[in-house]
Image (cartoon, rainbow, N blue to C red; front, side, top):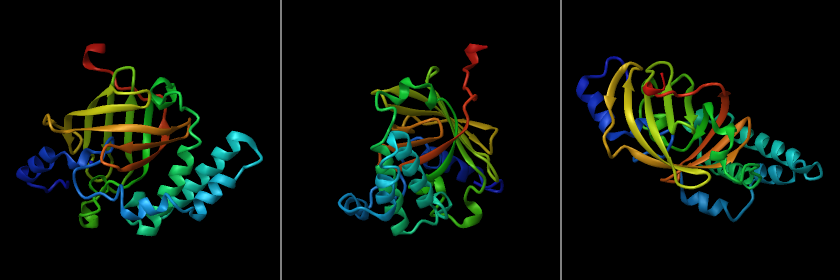
Amino acid sequence: MASAAMSSSALSARVSSSKDARCLSSSRGASRGMPASYRAARHRRSPVETSAIFGGLFGGGAAKRDAAKTALLDAIEGTNRGVSASDEDVDAVEAAASALERLNPTRAGALRSPLVNGEWELLYTTSASILGANKPPFARPIGPIYQTIDVARGRARNRETFPFYNAVDADLTPTSKSAVNVQFVKFFILGFLPITAPESAKGALDITYLDDELRVSRGDKGNLFVLRMYDPSVELPRPEDD
């Protein structure tokens, strides 16, 4: 998750690779999801992680979570959803996300919580293909990127906004209380041209932190996703529901 001037052959190549619609799972393209620096970061505490752990230490679980969320959002700030993140930024976000995941209030199962449903705005990811990190700036998504989840119907949708408005629909199959397999089923180029997704367009997603404001997820290729709730009322009815 191509400009209006892109040729039809380029669009076909883009769709068949399914690299540009991987907000639900990691892409097959270049990814910064699990760099060597991440492994090193697991054995040391960054300033943001220290802040997340000790912030609100004497104020109970909610205060700790609030401090951890603030630390994560501070680490994300200025990274342009991750496209301009330095190696140090990636390490800082990873450390802050890991600290927040340890305080997950929905450990019993995110997929059982109504909080997971609705439309979420992508704040940060390590997926280079979603960010368009390997493309010139004019070919990258500029406006917000959203993801809608409807667990009851087993559906999800990723959509870009300005300037390309590409989108993709997917079917979700739960594999645990917090994880799903993702089968992409239909791409919408420029928001309206439907193209059936290939069978190979699939992935997996594990929701590692969830509350009514923020969601952290991990893709099957190691990518990290941080999203903020945008509209909890959005659903994804199927045609047969009408």
